[in-house]
Image 1: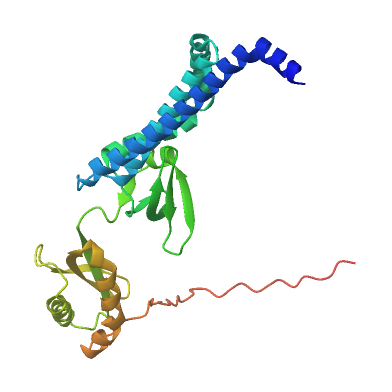
Image 2: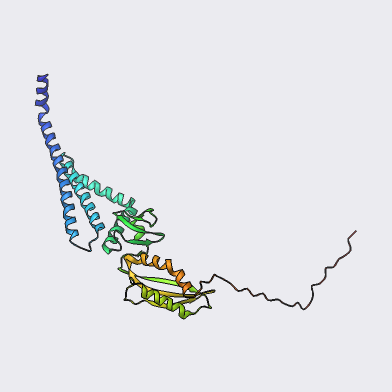
Length: 289
């Protein structure tokens, strides 16, 4: 048995040593790539944390690109160590990349759209956005999709190209936002009393911003009501708290001011016409035999 082992070693020992060296080199390359990705991720986090306005989503995408790049380089180095013709492989991968790119043009469009959206800073994680028929809070964004969560907890995954190709509303990007409070009063009510009510509301609500100053306007004369509007600016973070607080007590304040909230109504006028001639009588002919 020992002689057989020595014979196999003398015949294949050098090949096994070379193979072991290649395997060890592959493990070192994989470990080095892993360490490089980790160090690059730490450096990106350290650099971006010092920039107050830097988007974390862009940092995540940058780390993802570095990870894929290091992975491809490590694979090429490992294959080259095992004697694979990497020059031909790179050319083959290039040709395959062109074919795959043509087949996956929509996917590449999502990647390009995601990069453009990040560079233009249209939205970031935590913003409430609306595009097309979708609206929600941005939870995450990668090279392909943007993840949203609606106000009632529904998950939405939207391709980046669908967001880039539509007009986008960002409700939380600006620090302030205008609030419109509208009440409808009857035509028999006093408009001055409605203006006084809105003026008291604007003065008592301390969370309204002093500039721009609140405005009280006669919005429209409807079919059955008169619409009076209060326009005031608030901080975006407290917008909905103020809105719901005002809506809760608005009905009682309208009634306390002596105003009425009219129901939709229509006036129907019936015009009776006098006939100049009576209807002709029906001819009752004789029955045919």
